[in-house]
Amino acid sequence: MTITAVIDPLATVIQYLKGAGLSVTQIAEKSRYGDTWDAGTRGIVVRLDGGSPEIDLPVQAVRLEVRCYAENSFYALQVLGELITLSRSIDREPVVVGANTALLYYLVQASGPSVLMDMDISMDFALMFFEAEIAESAVL
Image (cartoon, rainbow, N blue to C red):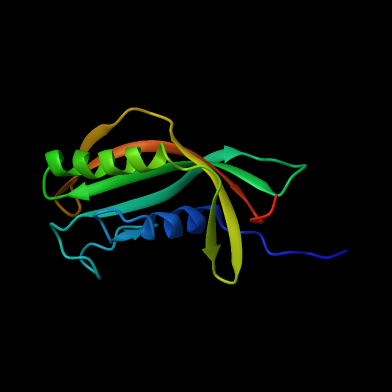
């Protein structure tokens, strides 16, 4: 029996977003404000928020919490709008993750937006949930 490495679905989505030509280049799984990101600059934070397991195929369906940070709520929603537009065009996109290639089947909106304030860093952000399905092999 051959055991293959499981592709990280969060890393797949983040890698895809980083190469998608968004106006935001700061994209990570946790906020880097106060560390490597300057306060007041735009950024996207993507976190896993559950999903549905697939026991018969090497596919992962996940729910993602996405926070789009900006200097004010207007611009946070603008960044989120870019992400929504991008998500509507995704259809079986190969994504290189480390030494492997995953297949991002889709990234779709799973909620409406919320506009909130992150009190720890004093920044506005737009919150939305997305669902994604990732195959652990680009050839399925």
